[in-house]
Every structure is written in C-alpha cells, then in structure tokens.
Image: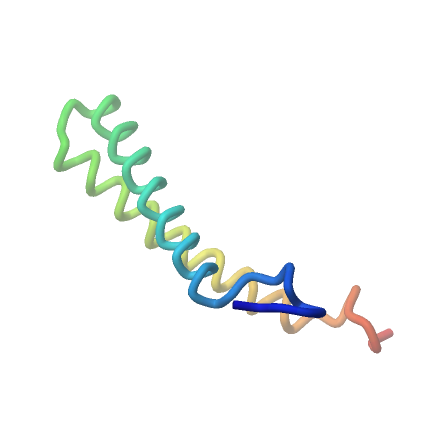
Length: 77
C-alpha cells in the first residue's frame, strides 16, 4: 500500500493485474469478432492471438523507436 506523497500512484501488482485483464478482454472480443467474420471459433481464436502478438511487437518497437528520439524529453534540445 502506498501512503503519503505517492499515495495516488498504483502499485506494480495493480498495474500488472490491469494489463492482464485488459489483454483477456481484448482476446475475448477479438475471438468473438473473428468468429462472427469466419464462423469458426478456431479461426477466430487464431485471429485474436495473431492480433495480440502483432500488437505487442508493434507497441514494443514503437516504444523503442520513441526512446531513441530526444524530442520532447526534458533536458534535451
């Protein structure tokens, strides 16, 4: 539990729990959309997993590229 100055900050455990539940919700939604589009739960699940993996990789690369850019960071020109 955090108290004092950082009391409004989340714990790492809470942040991880929120990320996991968000991924589960997204996986369910994408599986359902895939099922509606294909008529197959297996195909729908495959689409959902492919979307989850490609989204993770894309976000990771996006973050690494932005980490290398100095624009907008305090203490840089």
